[in-house]
Length: 487
Image (cartoon, rainbow, N blue to C red):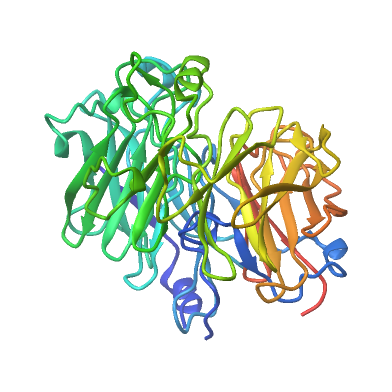
């Protein structure tokens, strides 16, 4: 296999890496819980209308972008790096101040759609958001690569300083799971990767069209030396794990949701929410899984639970909760320590009259957690359905509509605050809609900002990041940076 890394001249790199540290964005939605909460000093309700495209930044990449960009600045460096992975099976490191390419690594040949039994991405390369190990200076990702004439899922580790493939990588997942019913040609990898210590977790589902006898699968790998440690798969056929947020983590455990299975009358892990220890050991303990009582109807109607990664959060008083959002528009509040088994939710509520397929954002607000999600027909505080963006107030025992806002597009929201609490702002791109960046007050949903120009090529479910006094939005072939007035 041939890997190609293009490096800038050493004189430029020398200027890139020796002064101060900044907050890295190492994973999807900035946190293992996938809450999408960022701290952006100086970005307040007052300054949000001053947001503008940074004309000094020009970021160019090769290929379609479905994965969220990441941000990394090593200790003592003058500039940070934006890490952008594309469907061309390329990973780019861009200077976060100028957009200039620092290194570019090509990992192989992406798989043409014609070589796959179904799907809707052409060609298929890197879809799931990578994860950074800042301590070790590495980034991990799954790439779909045509190898010896066959599609293969290869998990890579790259050195962040220069993009070179680290020793022992890549790991061929199909070869590692030989005998465990994993066929790379029918397994997609859309969910974000997760890292717990030196254990890397990668989730797999199926392609658009649901073809073949795939299974919702989680693979756990050691990073040093790289090898597969364990795997978990749905007992029933299908049940894909394909939410953009992939796997969330809290309390030393991993959480994920599965989709529709192809089974009979007996439940076989479809439409479920699961909590697993890092060894991915299967358990029948109802404390460790949940499925709605109408799971069979959801299966038959293709109304997956797996369009959204489970969202863990803590509330004042010590309540440890998990919110699951279903493709059918229902929200389920779960006890994180006792998921409850079949029909074991604390409460549920219908919160959208349209599909929920997104990465929600969340932030604490007194006695409840505010959760913001994208849906074309979201529940509003007055009981009507409207908007395109909805916010819920989630307490230890209830789910209540807080506000809704107009949004034409399919982007996934994030939230910025000045200091973790002050002036929460919801940011979302009108992906495959009006293609503009929007901002809303987190407490009321009142609009604060809409970008003057469209941002071309932003894919559905795409999410932005806040880092380095910028907001970064990635679209096909390019990255746009926004900055704001003030410190």
